Image 1: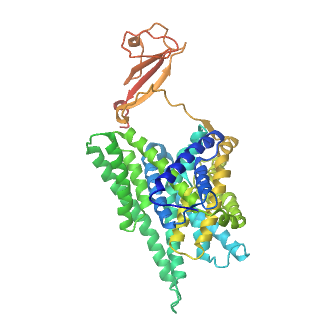
Image 2: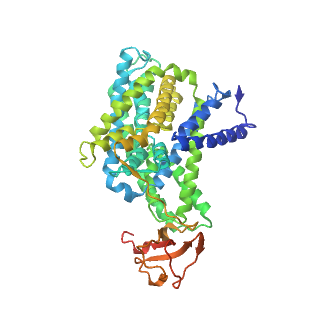
Length: 496
């Protein structure tokens, strides 16, 4: 059995990352969720595989928390408010009411399982709902990696609905989990001869719930606006410093919110949305850096979780985990979605079915299950193994079937082709690049560039002809087949 040590940790870590990246190619090729492959690599190197011993739940919780911060923050940064604004109500309802109802229905089912003997007798009512709570959120990273790899978009404006729901439902699931952990700790404290004060326990739970969401929202919006204003005024030498500064702001917001008993995950997501939608120097470079860091965090988190799990223990709970997973996928999540969206008439039945199916589980439920282990809740080991098994099955079955289900429900659209920019990049605040290939229906061949009527504020900055690039001026004669690279300036956008 191999143990981690200061001497070998970099060697082992680099081998794990190298292996994960190589295997990820198979995921892109065959439509297997890449993040699932990262977990499998961790399991293959783990105690029941090549013998790499890692069983420190505290370190795993630390790594998972940092990774979740980065994923939520960077997801917020790249969320375009104009895109989610039309579906803001649907997304918020799904990420709050939907999560609560999912936990409620699934917790009730788990409670019934304990009554018929499928779960250990030590699984109290609170523990049943705690197990359900840690599984109540969906994984945004997995969903959009799958859609992106399938080169697919969705009808009925579903993409922003799913983006908003999956990016913002982790904070709600976290709050419910923390509240139920506190209740479980009070219930399982060593007997002191004093009866439990249930009204007080429920009151404390409601207070924690309200403070977590309320303070988290206030801190996220307030600090997000403050830092977005500061970033707009600040001038630094080099894009790399901006990227590092923006990331450090996220960690600061998460930490300071936690110090005042707020929900750091909610605060960091809201702040990310606000900062990402304000003018910022070197925004393109910041986003590229955030994407790289997000991938690194996801990789490290899933590899760590794969190392942490004991496959033999996970298989021991497979039957009951399968029952819970089937209920969650086909009854609990759909019920929650349909009830949450009752007042939204614009979404078709097909769209609601698809939203129900895309309740994909990722690393978040496993990390929340680790919280129960670290809190030393009786039965938390069983919760961890059940959640891990359900997550694996969800990523395998739901993850691989998302493109097929979208096509079956006639909700799939081909992804818009990104413009060919010939390697040219411009700051986002300067405008956007577009390309156009001249055809027979365009101005007659031989016309010069200055004779072509372009939309107001648009300039041709490069022409590609027969594989060669031409820097144009007004006297350049155009030919059929020429590809024009154009820039449209933001100053002509009335919304700015």
